[in-house]
Figure 1 (cartoon, one colour):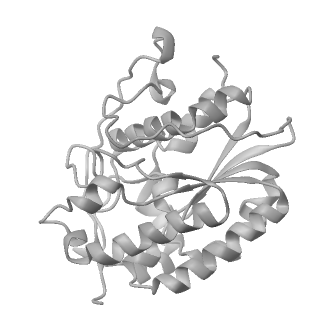
Figure 2 (cartoon, rainbow, N blue to C red):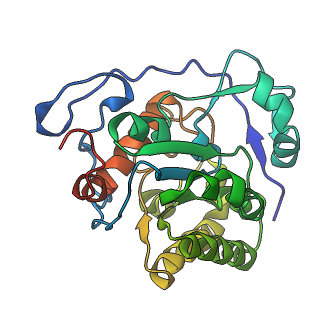
Length: 277
């Protein structure tokens, strides 16, 4: 598989203006989580039973898709930015090239839930890197629930699916042995898998993307955990919502947050996590 590059584009991100909450409550910012207008493939998942108290948290553990990567002000060093360089130059990019979007879904959930929500997204992180990070970046926060979003960077690097699966197996086992409930997130939605944009790099690698999607789905069945299949429904490949070929813009992250909130609504409300019931 050819080595893929992450194209960096300077983008003036659009602020998210707000929408109605359930039951007609209007508030501003990323608090405006409501039922999405596009429900074709977005599934409202059954509730998890989670015993939690003030010592617990929700940890959103993943890649830049969790972190909320927004390119800001500075042009990239070169027209293309290899993923390998992007990861190994983390200290430089942390300082100069991006910031975390306020509309990233962990930030939005933290505003509306009683339980503390932590954003533990890591730019460029692979499933192998996740295993190195899990103790300090996840377990140390005593998570009652971990929302797990990994494998996008493994896919972009052309890592064999079997290797990524082995890492995910280990990661899920660690989290379950700790006692955390887990929700898996796919980095590509079902609609895009069936209708890949022809001018997008994903078009030429759709079979590998489908293998990764199937791997995540199989893991959800194997370990009896929830799987959010379509949090990027209507976002991926849509220029209105994307900052580059991979990352949503601020408006796209707000839509992603809305889709995740919709998917996990029963878990949040039935476990008294939601501030407005």
